[in-house]
Amino acid sequence: MTLEFSYQTILLEAGCDEAGRGCLAGPVVAAAVILDPNNPIEGLDDSKKINEKTRELLRPEIEAKALAWAVGIVSNVEIDEINILKGSFVAMHRALDQLKTKPQLIIVDGNRFIPYKTVPHETIVKGDGKYQNIAAASILAKTHRDEIMRQLHLQYPHFGWDRNKGYPTKAHRLGIERHGATEWHRMTFQLLPLETPIKDI
Image (cartoon, rainbow, N blue to C red; front, side):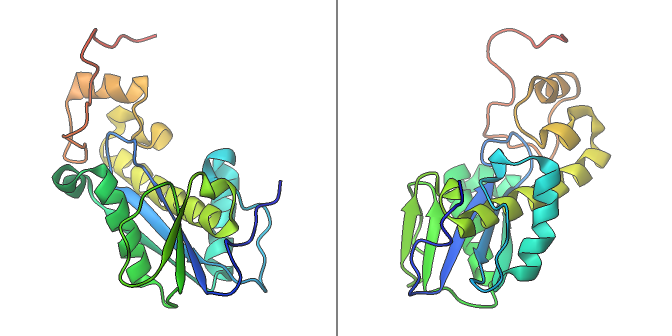
C-alpha cells in the first residue's frame, strides 16, 4: 500500500516521529521532515516495517531530496529528569528548531504532543504507516539513533547495542546483570526484571 504524501496540500507540512522511546539505554531521537512533492521518494513506510538495509539506503535519499529535515536528541540523563514522554516531545521540538524551512503545519505520529510555538499540529495514531512525511521522519530518527548506539557499542560491547540498539532484549539485560549499568542507561527505567535472574539460553 502506498502512503499518502501528506495530511493536506495547502500548508507547508512537516512530519515528526521519534525512535528509542522504549529503550533502556541511549537517547531518544526525533526527526522532522518536509518532503518535496516534486522530488518523490519510493518505498517510504513506517521504519519498523522495513529492514535495516532498506532504512540505511533511504536515509541519504530522504536527506538529499527533502525540502528540509532535522534531527533532535534528548539524552538518557535528560530523560531521567523529565520522563520519556516529555523527552520525546522535546526531541521533536529540537528537530523542528533546526529546520531551515519553517512549516505551517506539523503532523505527529501518536496521540499526544506539546504544541510547538504557534504552529498548528495534528496527532495521528500510526501516522508513520499513513503519511510519507511521518514515515520519512521515522526512518531518519531510527537510523540516526542506530548510528549512535553502534558507536556506544564500541565503548561498551557487553550489552549487544550493535544488535538490540538499547532495547530490553534478554542479551541486553543479561549484560546489565553481569556488568552493571553504564552512564548511558536510563536509571528511571526498570533495567532488570523484579522476579528471577536472567539465564543464558
